[in-house]
Length: 431
Image 1 (cartoon, rainbow, N blue to C red):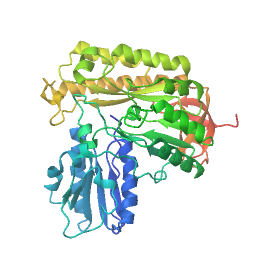
Image 2: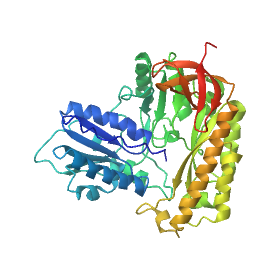
Image 3: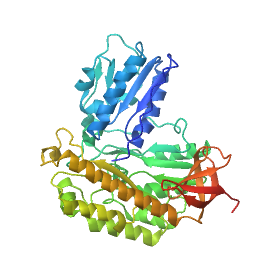
Image 4: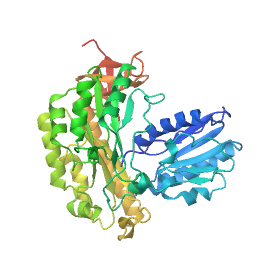
């Protein structure tokens, strides 16, 4: 699971505008730009499109709340709902009087999807498991973002007991390597200094392609054929699937950023087994040690779930202690949220107060880990990508606040002079 984005609100001032309200992961953010382009091509006007997330019940609740608010603020606008929550439970959104159209995940990127057709069905959601293609909608960058994202993969073949996402995204399918490389080359030529490879389960990239190439082979090919791209970054990856070629790239390719966000979910072997994860606690620790052996400056983030069904205090302590044992720097903590029709939803649940308290303890451990990470970097001089005025990201994803006139998308040298517990503080330097 990826860190939820803060949903972007509709813009009521411009009644003729098409606003995209994005919930969920970075892949959704990418696909919202596909939606923006498709809506413009289809001539859509005075509308709000909600690109929903289904990873937690809270994400679905927020989407429904945003839809109701948008109808109050824009009574004449066309309200369209799509994304994972719409794919999984289209009837729930079709039942809302505020909603004009429900589109599935496959349909949301199709040409003509946003053309107003008076006699067209109000719900257009097909079987996502029947979809075999991906990357038929490559775009050039993201609106108002300093870095570009490239979707290399969609869907997931694994069935973790807590996860509903495969039912919203379908089975794993990979973009052709040639198409990915060509898009990265185009983005680099347009001036993007950093490209992020994204997807639902990007370490499974290539398994469905002829010859079954690996993600590491794709990364090596990109770096070879896009020599002018300064920085290539990976989004969230599965610790069970890092291949030898990717390890070689981490060791030998300085343009591959030393930051890995791992889908760990827990640090206790029994809970990992009940989650149907494919790695153990020892596997995770061994992987992190192996990466640090070849790339010592690598920083690690992780997704962790608090309060999974049947989790005892001792089991939770194993997850809590993993933060320090693994030397994690960035945590995305999710209180367990039972999703309909998943095996975990049928397991003995913990009291919500216990789930909430454990999530708070994990987040506190994450705050301490981030502060230690930032403190260890005081005195470093780093190359950082400016994200917006006064904010930049180092190669290891450290956020840095600085005073300077550098524009978003530029790479600048910053000397880290301090930290405030949330981000480093730096000054521009010629070093």
